[in-house]
Length: 318
Image (cartoon, rainbow, N blue to C red; front, side, top):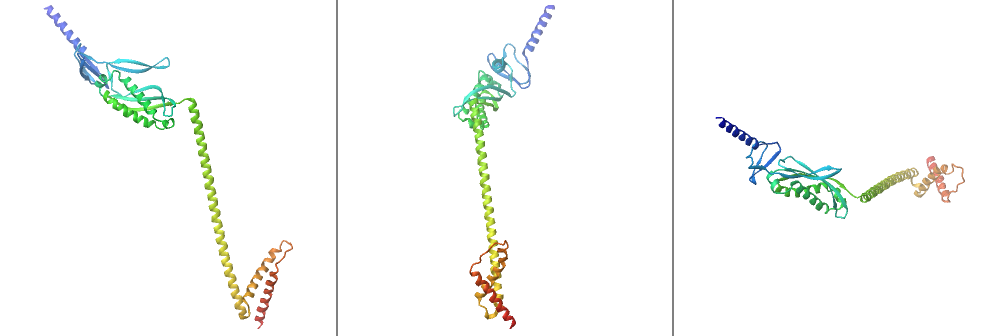
């Protein structure tokens, strides 16, 4: 009886040990690939799972990460049985790249990826992280090598988009989804940076000179337009004044001829009006006390004034 009890206890302990040994709890956002006798069996999902001890074994995956050792980022390869299905960032060190115009630059990038199919991630590549990193570096060199240095700084988004397309094509085979690819820093040699700084200063100076010249040209055009408009207005004013003056003189001649009836010669009347204009301007001419000389024709004009006045007075007495 005691022997049977011992055997039962031993059997119970063995069963409990097997159950405990076969019990596996998988955390959220994790996955475990199980092999049975060396071949793929299943992928454990988050929660409580049970496997057959000593028959089913988790398949490990190689993960390459960078650790700061002695002030430098050193690549460390580890084997893990639990596959992290969260989005992961791979910040690979800067690498030297030669542009299309033969300038050596150092490019530092970051890559965001997520394991979608754990089975493919384990079986399709020997080292998933290393494969992603090397493909990203080679693709980056290829894209940067097609561009000149000046275009490189303004084409970051274009490079990111092309890299993501390349990584997606390979990632589908590896069970990985590349969500984002970002170029963080682009370091150029000091002498190239100094040359670019001088070129930028010269370009700004050129733009300033162009703007100044353009402003001066527009100001000159505006002044010329203003002077042209002013001259037109002055000419129009003088023309209207001349028209009004001529109209006034015509009316004056008509009035004088009407007053003198048929006894007045029109030429004499015109001389009379000119003489009146001479008489009006004489005080202005001699107001400074200087000696003035009148043309010979002025005497005949003034004589016409006296003749017209005499005729007009004589006509009035009659």
